[in-house]
Length: 144
Image (cartoon, rainbow, N blue to C red; front, side, top):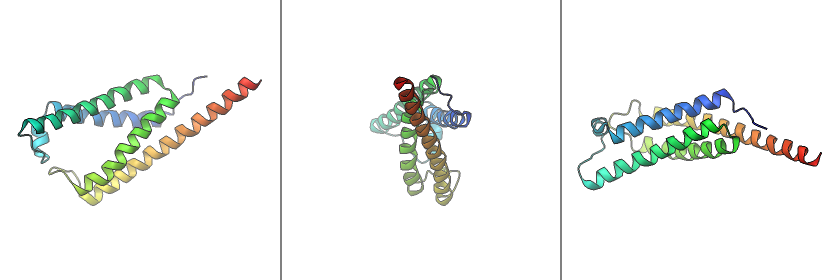
């Protein structure tokens, strides 16, 4: 039995993928934007870090795209757990170490991150409940 992932969860994940892809573009291609944020890219080690960040983020985006196409609840749970863990860390890191071209103050940054974490947590809980319901339905079918 295939379960339909709610549209709002797909939209949230689609936005997160677009954000990741924009970060990938900046760190692979648009080094001027990276420099404007206050990140220096002067040495081989700097380029190594920038490209590794881009590679990891690209991998995360590509895997997320495949999971979205699968519409598999268990895979969505794993993806949203990954999103939550990343976003919780960014909630702490971004306000403590703001970028030079940050669009908002550190106070607003933490507020925005908390809202994003709340939305991701609600999505995670919804997906987890869907998974639990699927398990219950499957076990009922198997006992009949």
